[in-house]
Image 1 (cartoon, rainbow, N blue to C red):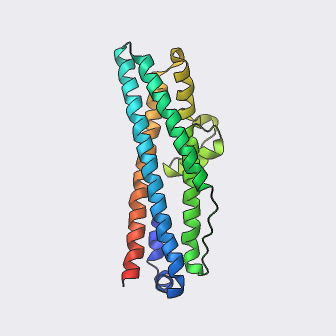
Image 2: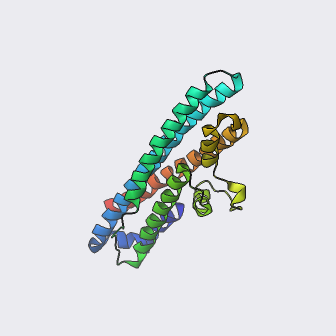
Image 3: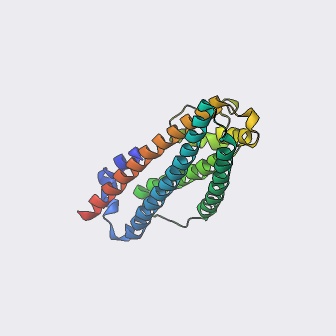
Length: 209
């Protein structure tokens, strides 16, 4: 998104944004940025919900309290609910976009939106427990991690879900790793949100001149 902000500052881009024949495409770009901001909020809310559940479970594990089973069941019920919500969002994401742009100066913005939508497709699948390595490849870009082997980046959402099904195999270390992964995703989403807001402001400022 920082690249798009830089592109929007170029004279040729500002000229294209000021052309009346491009207004429909520009409106679609602004609508698209709002849609992505909404996806950011959905993702952050889901991650916060999961993190709160994991923190409670961590507390129980540290203090060796007897109510672990009940808290784990609550977490798993919550996870199933989130997965259903993700499936609905993913279904909407897969709806083919018909956005077109005839001005070459604006094509990069349209392509960037498509790539970002694909990232959220991967993120929701990843948080749902996808075992596909390709999903991590895209998600890792969100949290600025270098590409590593699929084995080294086993989906901890899947690991914890499996361990919670059998509490005897539950490992505090895996819960901590998942919490760290969630924090990285939250940081990446916050950075993306800030960039999206700057991107929208830059376009609106140009249109206002």
